[in-house]
Length: 151
Image (cartoon, rainbow, N blue to C red; front, side, top):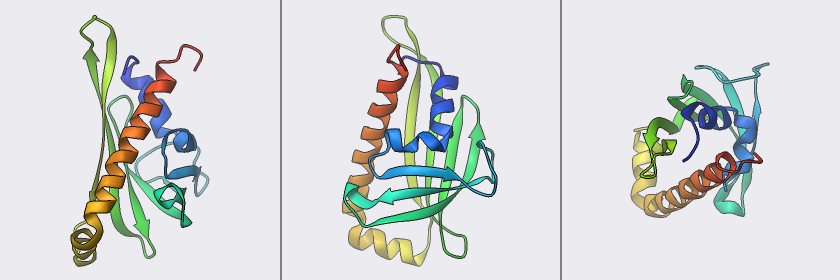
């Protein structure tokens, strides 16, 4: 992306922007009086599963928060059980035309457990495909915002 790592990180780490980018998480709100990102801070995201439903709120906790370098969070189930980790990494890069930019990587991983192994064995192929498509959409939408001079 033709933007600084810091600019992209600011957009991604402010979870109030999540609805601009994600095809499934359409809204997000800070919890417990938080007003910005930090490791341990919680927020909740409104998910429209597969872009059509069901719709529900998930509580998340920030697990990585280094401005301009990385941002990550884990989705929590009731009882604060970790289920899926989402992570962004921002690496300064130079385009072939010499423009300064950032290589942005988004990734996810399931928390290892018997339940997630069973889920992944039965439905993981479909969920993995949906997650990968959603990540492509998310990154394309971030790119559109950071590369638009009016943004």
